[in-house]
Image (tube, rainbow over all chains, first blue to last red; front, side, top):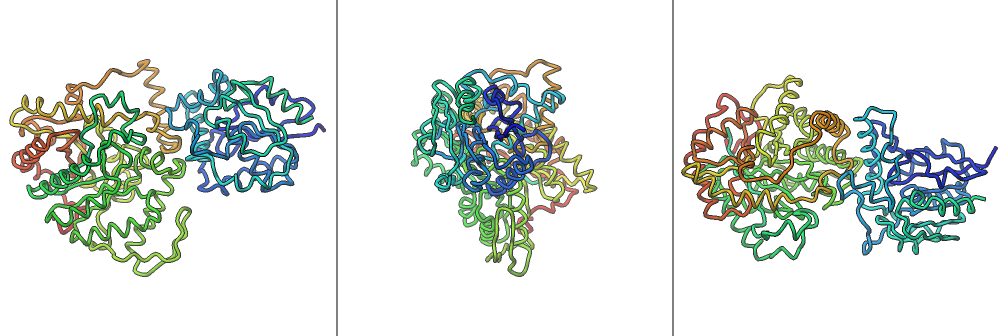
Length: 230
Length: 401
């Protein structure tokens, strides 16, 4: 059996794996959908961070893949980092792609939720919004597709409102897993200057790429990830 | 019918080029447009206007809560209500209201409303709005995905605090208190009438109906557009098996009275254009944060949106003109007879027993506010008061009956 890793998607959900992650060789990628991001009805967001972590860790434990390497993008990076600092035995290697979790009030970036709905996704990319995000939940009726995409945004907003800082900075000293940090230099919602505040063994900054760096620069990010998992 | 005088307390000196200078009247309105001297003068003037409404016979005077807002200078309506308790004698003091999730802990609302009820000798109406997304999730940082749960929990805590005779422990999801025991308690027992202001969210009026509270539809867009919401509210009341007492409902309406229809059209154009042009210049990005509206509301809107798009291929556009505002009923202006007839139509078509009137709006000159208020009190109000006289208003302070 090939070794496995867990991939945690970002703010916009995970309609499908990016080419950078899907193209990894010699390793199986397990990509659970984060709680609330499946577009299903009736999700009640937890009222605190511990409630969120409990839901997420239940989902990760259910994969049976831990301990293993973990890749986390955006809000998935925040959750992957929380896992690595609070359950260090569960994460053998860590790759963070523009992780949320730290916030600089003097350089807050753009608020992805203070724009009208149709303008939210474009804020996350420097390139055009990839088709999988525009056409997510294709097997549902047209109206229900819109509702499901809305529910993904509800989960995302609930998880990070009013901005993604739940005290992770005070826990990062516990990070022991070898860590790769990748950041797009044109990230509009998590400014690249935040990268300096993250501990990392290896750093890759991608000129011109936005918050969803793996979609904006698939070859560069895919290459860095392949090297890191090999 | 009860006729109430409602003040938003707008900042009266937003510049003519406000829409070019500011991205929004709310949340991130530029502070360099604010002159505290203008606010100081406005507060005193506006309190005078509310006191005058009491003196000339309006049944209630209303204040409300907004934050970081150029058309609503009342982050704390309770402060204004406190001032009014001392300078008014008869009118109900309707605080529309306290956005419950913003008070930490929410027993603060139980305490301050109890104070206001005692200070006013039992004239308080307690308004419990969820609050707009601008006020709650952007200005006060509340999580839109949990806001309504927090609101309902706060409501339950406040009602228990007013009703339970002994101190109790409250173990909520958002508030934990070992000892709940407000002093003072309201003069009205077990509590003041509860009104729920809303902007048309389905979940708000459904819950209000179930709780047997008064639902107040606070729309700036007139009775014609308000009909669908109020029809939904009354259908829910019928489903619940409740009576159709019109005092279960309230509605907000802009009104301008003059001696003739022509004079009214001339007098009220500028303040209406100020309000709709500058005061409602809100960044659309603040209007609908994900989670503020429930899944059911969004599903309903999406389905109607998809159907509408299929039918028409798009909606109407273009700027709002003064004639539009009048034609669409956003603003009711005219002679006393004209206004009375239209308000009777509003009240009967929406079936509302509490009509909240904005007789000051935008940058209306104080003399025109007084003229509008006095003409209404003298020549419009007497002809409307008898409406719904067959019904008992169970949601009105006894001290004001």
